[in-house]
Image (cartoon, rainbow, N blue to C red; front, side):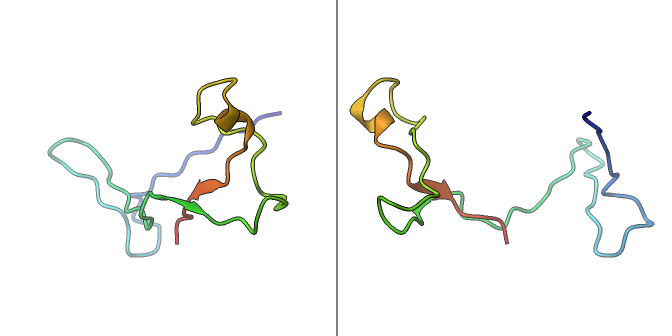
Length: 76
């Protein structure tokens, strides 16, 4: 069973610092601590974390079946 939860990140009951709602456009900006670049963080071809298919390549191409070794860096 799927349970959904929501949290108001602007709630004053939360500890500081809290996120601030932009009153002009109603948007809530959340800082992302990542460079959003792709990095090969695997230990080589036998690394179990390598994805078997590279969805960034055309379907059925050799690159598609070569697997994906690149990942977006994790948030800090």
